[in-house]
Each structure stands twice: as C-alpha cells, then as structure tokens.
Image (cartoon, rainbow, N blue to C red; front, side, top):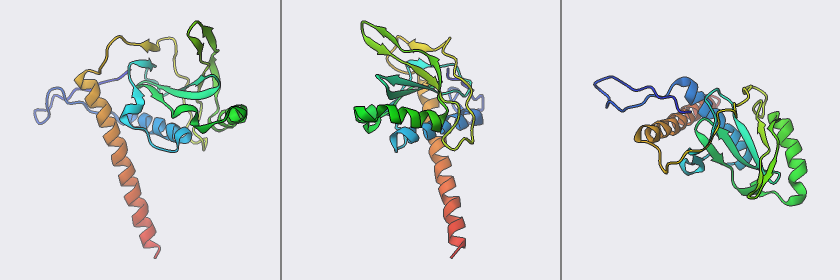
Length: 186
C-alpha cells in the first residue's frame, strides 16, 4: 500500500515523509486516467484510502458498477469517478468499447452478484490513452477491500498531501515551461 520513507534529517520533523519519484510518477498517471473519465482533476475527497487498496506495483484497476465506470483501484485506495460519467443507458456499451480501446482494458475479475447487488467486473488498465505508458496488472490477490478504521494516520495523511503537492508543483512547472516556449515564438 503506502510506502513511507521517514526522514531522519534534524531539519525535518521525525515524522516527515518524502515521496519517491516512482510514487509521484504513479500518482500523475492516476490523475491522467481520472481526467480521461471525469474531465477534471481529482480532489483529495475523491480518494477513499480505506477501500480497494492494491499493492504498489504501478498498476491501476477499473471497477464497473452495473456496466458504468465507477472507480479506479490504486495503491492509494479507491478513487471514485463522477457518477456514471454523464452516460445514458443507451450509451453504456459504446462507451465501454471506446474505453476498452483507449485504455486497453483487460478483464481480471468477473462480475459477482450477491444480496447487496453487483460487484465488478474489474479490469486492468494496460496503457494510457496515447499508448505511451504501459501499466502492469494490479494484484487483486492482496487487495484491501475495507480496512476497519475511519481516518488515515497522520503520516499517511501527510504522505497523500505531499503527493498532491508534488503533482500540482509539476503541473505549474510544466505550464511555465510551455508559456516560456510559446512566448519565444512571438
């Protein structure tokens, strides 16, 4: 799940966390996939870290709910997609075909029906929309379906906040670079 690197530097508090570049890159890929579905960037409230956490390997799962994209399964927990992504029932099948093509969906868990309703199916996202980045298959074998606590530890909360900050800093840095390049063209 979360992989923490505690800082022992006296300049930082003993509980300070550092995000690895691997985690930041993974987080940015999650944001990109979320944007594909939602046409907006995720907010902290979109993450449910107690549900559907998969072991960290860089993989991302997609859970459907009655045929509609419902959530992304990540090592940071479930990332809820905006309800039904604006789909009408007649559009669900064609949307699923488009998503399958765009993100290379691979079925990893069949839909299961129980007294609570339909669970799944779950797909592995194998690549980004451009096909530039290939994702490994997430491991559902050790997926945490629900952890029985109501809040993150202070270290986990700080870690997630640092990932959001690193992602936002990266966007600002890339935007400034693009603006500098475009201003050179005038």
